Length: 273
Image: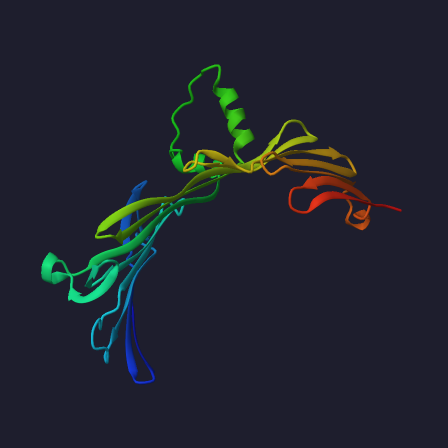
C-alpha cells in the first residue's frame, strides 16, 4: 500500500492533494502430489483513489474523487478496468452546488460518471485451449471424428482473438444513464492449405454494437521457392494489393507491387535490373 500527500500553491490559492494506492495480494496454498506449495495470487492489480481539498475556496472546497482499478482474470487472459468519478456535493441542472450529498440522501458520495472495460487482448486459440484444458486429461474417446477435431484445432491454434466491450454510466438530469460505448470481436491469423499456400485473415472484426463488419482483411501467400507472392483484399474499404518479390534481402529491390488504396489511390510500382 502506498500513500502520496502533495501540497502545491498557485498565486493565493493552496491546493492539498492526497492520493492513495492499494495493491492487495491473496496468499493461497495448493496441495499437489502431497507437496505443499505456497503461491501469491494478485487479486487486484491496482486500486487507486485521488482527490483535492481547496483551502481558500469560499465554497466547493472538496474536489470530485477519482476511483480506478484494474483486475486481471485467468492469468491475465481477461482484463477488467474501471474508472469512476464520485462527488461529495449535490448537483442541480448539471451544475455542482455547495450542498453535501449526505444532507438529503444520507450517503457520503454521489455517482457522477464511470466506465467499465472488459478486454481479451490478442490471445491465440492455442492459449485459450490450454487455459480451459484440464491438467490431467481423461482417456480420449475412440470416436471417428476425434482426429478431425484435433486437425481443426491445429489449423486454428495460431489465430489471435480480440474481444472488447465497454460501458459508461453518467449522472445527468438527476438520473443515472447507462451507455454501451463499444462491443466488438475480431480474429486474425493464417491457415496453411498446403506446404506453399497460406490463407491470411487479418483484422476480421465484427462490431456487435452496430451489427456490422469493420473492414475485414483477406488474402493469401504463395511460396515460390526463392520468390514470395502475396495478395490482400479489404472488401469494405475497396482496397487490394498484389506483391511478388525475391525473398533474399540482398535482392529485395527485385519486386513488383500493384494495387488500389481508397485513400492513397493506385499502387503500382516495380523495380529490377
